[in-house]
Length: 278
Image (tube, rainbow, N blue to C red; front, side):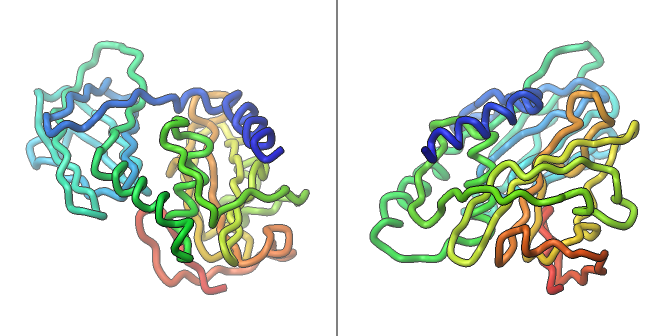
């Protein structure tokens, strides 16, 4: 039954998220070749938080952002082949990328970098987690949820400490307040529970004719952590107008939503994740 629920969720998500299909490339200590089309964002996914090292020579020509293992690259102008580095935060491993850009129109898929050292670490965790009663961190829970929607099946590892739950019907029309009010349509599509943490995966669709940045401070709920698959979404009815919001609460989302707008006070924000004490 749980497998059927997961397949149904993925089916409905793929109807609107097929633009995020990614090509997998493997890191073998040989610089990876990545091409950009000028003016078009390309996304690179790594299963770890990363630090981007962009050479000064192309900084004026490249827009780069990083959040939760996703690197968003947009070439502003053409530039010659340039090598830059990604440093994995978990083990400080360096990945080399030879980046080029062109004005030629190309259908370039997003990329997923498979790093053997990270896969080995996941296998060790998976084999030991059934014997060692540990706690799932918010990052681990979020990554588990994200992979269930965006990751290839081979990267999905069962974790006995995380389980899916039935979605309780909730009115999410006031999920965002402030400047984000009435900007997105929000639909809860899955719930994952680990310990006392409830992670609700919420599909956001931009309702406006302009590109929108997701402002986590406008979330009208009592939450501990929040992150989104994309930092911003395109205007409605354009590829990229949909993304996923992952909201971690200490009780089901239906009991964490505020009836009235309440100002959120942040303790800190890092890599797209916001922790709130409200």
